[in-house]
Image 1 (spheres, rainbow, N blue to C red):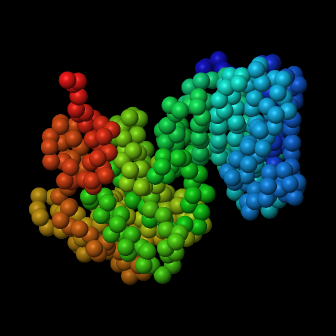
Image 2 (cartoon, one colour; image 1 turned 45 degrees about the vertical axis):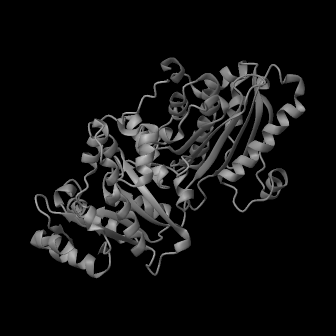
Image 3 (cartoon, rainbow, N blue to C red; image 1 turned 30 degrees about the horizontal axis):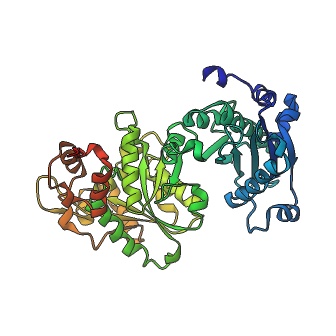
Length: 474
């Protein structure tokens, strides 16, 4: 792997060109015109390129791939891959038994002349790993951060070569993903979605690949849905009213579910919330996944499996501070109303000025991001340690330092902070760490602390080290 990583873009393109079994088409619409060019420049391109096409005009693109409302989207990329790959065995029937066909496509929006847009693109490869074999897809979404359009095109060309080279020369899915930014870094190009699928990759769990994108610094956040399919955040969250709950979910208990449902009842009644565009989001941060600095991938997949069984959309992020998460979601939703659910002890951390000591603007700088956007915090009560007394927002206000009381009151009076009124306080004694310990020890009775679907999933799949029963044949 180290030796492969040292290859330049030109060397990678040349190595592919010299492999006579790899042959296919390039289709690049919009501003992504650099990938095929790299293979031409490397030399020996006749060994790789059957066709290149650049349907830059929308009318020409529609005539080839069919009409569409948007041109830089996954649906358009899929149509391009479908059309181009189908032509290869049809027109090159004499090569079917000796060739590993591929169709490469991208649809890209570069930086405009006024520099007012977010440049991004969809890139995909449909390919065979052996002649006459199954067809696989690798699809990624990129955001480009260079301030010069030519540099963006250059960087995109590198990613495209990396994708084709890795898909044919590497076998490990993580190595394929990590090689995509060879010769680049995430400050220039961010990859916020990666999906590798097909008969040759049925062992790949793309939820785990989403985690690895964040863990490796390729992006700050990645997302997948209840069905386990990875999602592109800016597309999935676009102009949605999002209600998000951050947690460890190890495992989700009745408290977690009530936090979501009770807050949703309030959130959907907000005058500026469109009920038809409401999305619930469960968020896992790297900090909650790696308290000791190491991420247990098996444990992550167990949590993902549970959340998916509850029908949740899951965001994996590296936004430890709540205000950074608020900034990110506000940008993704284009300023639509956001709701953020947190326990009252989490609110204590938000108001702890020591958290912001390294920032020039201190707590006010962060609060301008957290509360400046169209956002409301829904605060769930807790039980005071060592007692049966509730700890609520009035109690929280009394315990605040004098210099923060007026700030807190301002946020309350302006509807930026609101208690979860219909919280089921009968469940506040449930502690997820205690439930997890019971599961791992094989103790009975833990089922009553979690939703029925959670208990069923844990037992059926042996999640969280649940001791599976051994069936001895009679």
